[in-house]
Length: 514
Image (cartoon, rainbow, N blue to C red; front, side, top):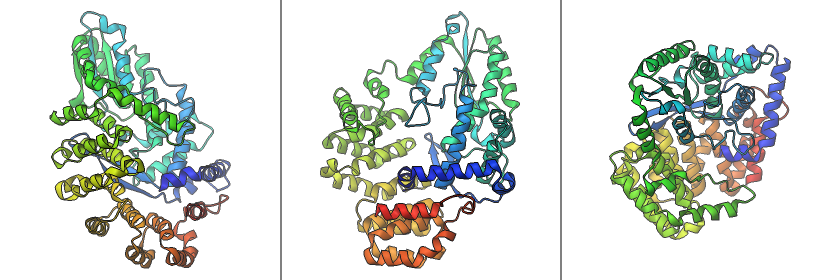
């Protein structure tokens, strides 16, 4: 919902962000730091699976503040890009849209770049692979603020970012909110002076986010290189992850990277190399879709999925590509793939790829071209809460699942969604439950929520307001009764300093969407 609202009201929201920024920069709001300290920036922490066994916390930020923070980040990214070494491969700023970042610069191109280093051919050369321990969590706000000030010394950008980060970190002076574009930019900004220190020290290095590869001519040189890297990180409050630091001979490193990249695995290589990012809103969407669809004529997706199923630890990237590929298959193939992906016997081993799998299933279930297999997919989805309830414990997993079942109501789903809503403490999960009731036109649930309006959080209220459009006269009457509460309930604290306000933009968007 938020993505649709932001996309369709982008001009209004961008103008609101720019107006706020200029008012802070020029002092129209009074002392800038006092104004920023007085804001309440809404955000929620969500649990997300990370790898086959771990978890991480991601931060879901209010849509306006997420947009505003991204704007600050983009301004800094433009100033920082020219300072960056070409050996830093992650999140390079794109020269043109639609996204922030250059998609041609990836983890794969990072690894390939390390293989092209001439020092790898030297007899006795070794390669260090290491990463930064708890990278995002340990970024110290004050040091980051100083680096940002160097990029924009005459602006309040550094102070604004610092104050917003402090609120998102619940007053702590360290940690970036995982999940947003701005956090990725700020992490790269923090690493730029560290990278420069390595270059000045004569090291041969490559980096992707928090992963470093250092190429050295001997083990003695490798020891010195690790010392230099450790010192450079320590200057900014960071340290290496000792358990993930390895030293390999050049030959072993080449073999290891070849295995990582899938070289020699002819079956999956073509799938790995496909760029499956499809923009349905582009001017040439139909042609792009048909071109991608034709790409699969020589790739046996079912065979590749069977190979992954047999592995003790399936390849997360291959599974992600299979998830993205679902919408490009014929219905008969798509339903077979979904049956394998959602089989309770496979779900646990595929759990690290849950989000990619569920996005793929959703894309199929949302496309009427696959109507002939909707019932089969719905039955597969309905078995998950009983067969693998533990996979729905992380809030992010639950959000993907609720999105996939919102198309049609069944008694088993009605019971599940009501129990989930009543039991969860997550505003995002409750809002996803409301979205299910909206799609199902569940009048009794809407009436219950309408009567609890004053007890709902702002995010839930916005979803109920949108849902009201599905309930005819009753919904319209509810909107008339509640309209007077919106300016206060959805207040951001910037309304007296800007032209226009978030609440009125959202209300107008809902009216037009209806």
